[in-house]
Length: 80
Image 1 (cartoon, rainbow, N blue to C red):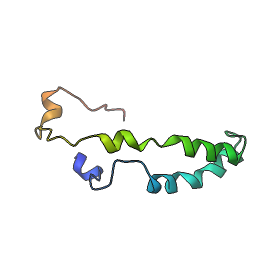
Image 2: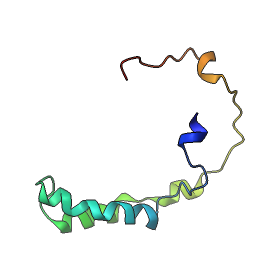
Image 3: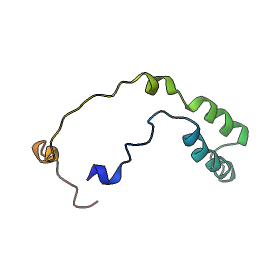
Image 4: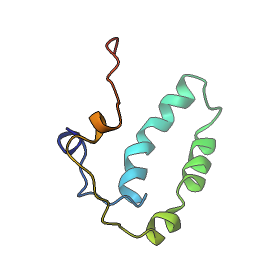
């Protein structure tokens, strides 16, 4: 099920694509009063990304099974 919902083909390193997705939200935060100014939004975006951690991470060959959730006794919340 995870493979149906997650795209592992995209880079996990935060960068320009993520920034471009977040920039349009800034004016909304200013408009609703959650942030005082667009300058604060811009400063937050400048400090938000620390790609060196993701760039330094190494991929692993983690092994699992198709029924790992059952083996771990994880149950879905019926109220969700």
